[in-house]
Length: 278
Image (cartoon, rainbow, N blue to C red; front, top):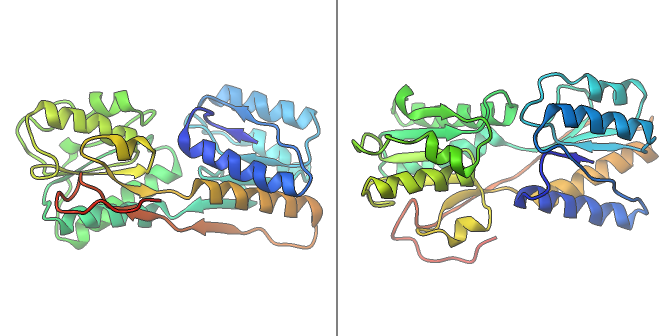
C-alpha cells in the first residue's frame, strides 16, 4: 500500500483496517509512505511493480497531478484500489462523501446563527478538497448567505501551522462569526488566532473541523468535527483489492462511499452536553 503519511491518526486507522482484513485472508502488507511527495509516490509505485506485488492500495499525495505511475498497474492488469484521495483511473475506490460532510458542517454553523462563515481548507488541487469547498458554498447558498473571498483560503498541506498563518488578521475586526476548516489541525490553528484576538468560542466565533482526530476532544473548547471512518475505509479497501486478485474477470469495479458523522462539541455550541464520542 502507498499512503501519504504514517504519523497521521486517520491513516493509522486505515492501515490497521487493511492489515486486519489482509491477515485474515493470508496476505502480507507492504507499507510505503510518500510524505506527501509526488516523486516518492512514483518511486514507491515503481518499486512495488518491480517487486511483483499481487495488488496495490493507494491514497495519492497532495503533490500528485500526473497518474501515469498508477496507470502502469492498470495496463499490467495488477489489482489497484484507491482510498480517500483517488486518482482518475477506472478501478475500485473507497471514499467518503466529502461534499455532503462539508455541507452538513456548514449547515450546522448557519443553524447556530452564524451569518459570516469563513473557510480554510487543504490543497484545492485534490478532489476531496474541491468537494468540501463545494459543500461549504452550497450550504451558504441554501441559507441565503454570501461568500467573502477575504475569508476563504486553500492551503498547501492543511496542517496546524497553516491554520495559524492563513487566518492571521481574520478575527481582529470580528468580520466573521463562523469558520469551517477542512482539517482539524487547520481548525485548531485558526482557533489560536481567535483566542489571540480576544474573541470567545463559540459565542463570538463558532468553529467546525474535519477528521475527528483525538486532539479535537482534548483542545479547549472541544472541537466540533466530521468523523471519518478510517478503519472501515481500510478494511473495505483491502476486501476489494483481494477480491480483484482472486476474481480478476468476474466482477465490475465499484466506488464505495462511506458515511460520515458530525460530532457536536463545544466549539460550535456552548450549551451542548458532553456526549459519548466515536
